[in-house]
Image (tube, rainbow, N blue to C red; front, side, top):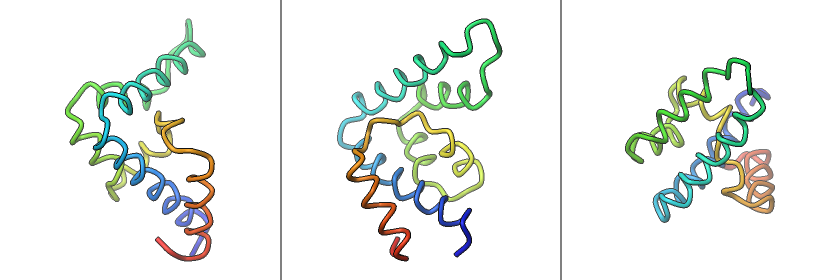
Length: 108
């Protein structure tokens, strides 16, 4: 498997776990993502923010089902948006390491 595809599989696996957390506690997970975007936006004070930030803000204000679609989708838009995901802090480093190992070892 090429390196880019392996990275996409790892990110998808991480976001599938995030999607499970979103289904279990939408307010907490969406709140964390919104807080991350707010914090990251401060870096762009007086400058134009990247478009992906605006896209995520719109998604997070919409129905959780749309967010779930992006977290688990395999279309190009979902892959692109996950590459700049605001869901930092939702899964632990231990969980992330286990996913990296699983993908590296060839499991999904």
